[in-house]
Length: 362
Image (cartoon, rainbow, N blue to C red):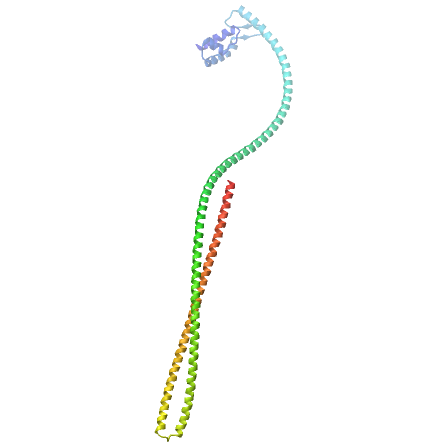
């Protein structure tokens, strides 16, 4: 059914002098494009079977001979005219092909020239593009560097602002600490000066007291030493006198012994006198011994007093050395305090300079 519709529609179009196409057949039959295309191809394959073309006539099956002859003549005339047109078209086509070939060759040469020119231009453009890409890369790198620098500058600015705020706070704290330290330092210096002055006055008073006491002891020791030396000289002179007496008495005793040896035959009176003389001599010797014991005691007392004076002198010398050492330590402490004051003043001056420098930076 579809085949017959497509075939009849194609033959009717061909009889009307129109070329059967898929669109015209679809519009006339209303079939699908795929079906019409398939059946139209089959119809074109059956056309040579329906038409038999000879040199004299064209026979179309299904038509009368008169109509077929007329159609054959028309067809023959059309074929001849088509051949003449074909030859003319072939000549014109050959001429046109030659011209086209020449034009094509010329255009090919021009195209080759243009191609070489375009290639050179393309190479130049590529070089320029590479240069522009390199320049763009350098510009991008510079932009990235500038962006990084801007970011770092912003961060550094924020850090500097934060540091500035922190430094301002530190400056305020440093000012307060400096003022507090200055007040405490002044109070401490005043207290140290007062304490050192008190210690110096006390040490000077003690030194004066000990010096006066040592002078008094020296005077007392000198007076006692003079009195003891005087007593010692007196005792020594008395001992010398007693020794002289004893010597004289010994000489007398010797003489009396000699006289006793000579005068043994004397009487009881002389023996009594001799016994009395011996008792007197014994008393004198005892007295001399007592005097010698007293002299020894006086010597021991003198030695003890000398030792006491020496001990007191050494004690006063030791105390004086202690007082001098204390005075030296107080002087050293005062010097250290003065050095500490100088160092603290230098430190306060350096802190003031640091504060001024920070203010100038801010």
